[in-house]
Amino acid sequence: MGKKYNRKETPSLFDFIKTDSYDVNKTPKPTPVLSRHLEKQIDPLSWVLGREHNKENFQLFEDVGQIYELQLAKMEYESFKENLALFRKRTAYFKIVNGRKTYHYFISKVKGKGQIGHTNQYITHWFYPYKGKFHGQMIKAIINFMGATGEEIILDPFMGSGTTLIEASIVGTKSIGIEINPALCIVSQIKLDSLRINYPEFEKSIKTKNLPEIFKYFNEARAYLSERKWEMEVNNQNAKDILMELWENHFPNSFVKEYPFEWRNLLLLIYLHALSDYTYLKGTNKEKSFEEFFYINFEEYSKTLKGTYETFKKLSLTPKKYTVILGSALNLPLNDSSVKGIVTSPPYSIALDYVKNDLHLLNYLGIDTSKLRNEMIGLKGRKNEKVVMYEKDIRRSVEEMYRVLKKGSWAAIVLGDVVVNGKRTDFREKIIEWAPQIGFVDAYAMKRPILGGFARLRYEHILFLQK
Image (cartoon, rainbow, N blue to C red; front, side, top):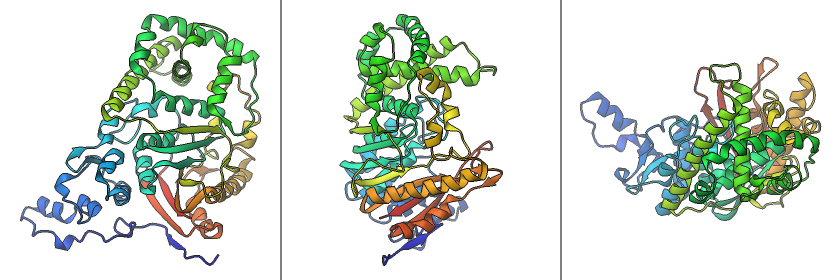
């Protein structure tokens, strides 16, 4: 297309960012002690910072050690090094900036189920179990690299459970999420709205003694909901409107409907989380009654709400505006060149059945899933035909990303090496091949190992495509 195109499939730690790398030969003469010698020669923080700031005033989180994390730490730093006060508020991988603890230090202390260090499951990220979640810390760093601020839009066209929107909202940039699964639209909207709940008012109004009646209400509503079978069209409907429709025309009247809209939705999500726990842990050594799971989750959600409220108040942090839309990544409801950055991960539907995973939730709400399977990327077709159709849809989605991106902006696409019919896929190579054909002028692939002996993926690639 006559454009300069750079392709770097596996950039090293020292060549990813187009800035001078830290020269280890210019460090002071090391002490004779071997450990001190190695520390001076292998000094990640000096490489991240370069020579522009005194590294004594900066500190990475203790668990930042993988190459991709250091790459991302340098990328976010390079984007905001001229405004360290703002960088302290936004950074993902720094514990201390300019001698002061960062906002992420405090935010990641609001711990949730299954949290690993400062990387994931903090604040409302853990609300409702969902397979294949992003690591919020990683997503925050990518958003920072893109430099989006204020009214500039960060888009996630495969929103899933809303991680990108939560992180964009927290760092202070506007965000839009597109998701074809109505269950996940509902979950994401509630997780985002929960960031704004006034916990003292919530605690004062919803007493523990009310919980048996609240549980009974949601439990008995199941029959009422199933009578009002809901066939949803993927028509770019706002998730908030879906929830309003749910309360107005699908749930029976009750004292629960007198609670504020966001509170009702949160109680619904706690019930749905308990339903998921009960469904998947039945018959295991973690089995409990459905009602017990509801009470336990209410207490745990309440702790997170309290921690989020108090932390945001301490930091004077107000989440930025977000919009969740039931729609398709193949036909984005956005104008050309309207988006500052894209952070997303196409579904692993060719290996993981998302409809089946959320069937208990969809069935409870009375949502008809017959059409959903014919529309979801990766669930279309049979056997080998599935992969062919998946590839076609992924290319179409990348073309749509290019269309809505502003010139000079970046799309970050996280891809796993999923196994289909016994073979591992590698769509990284295909997307890098498509990039110049579509019009992108730059493409990088960053490798992220998946740790843990039981991981279904060996690694992920984070693809960076620049328009």
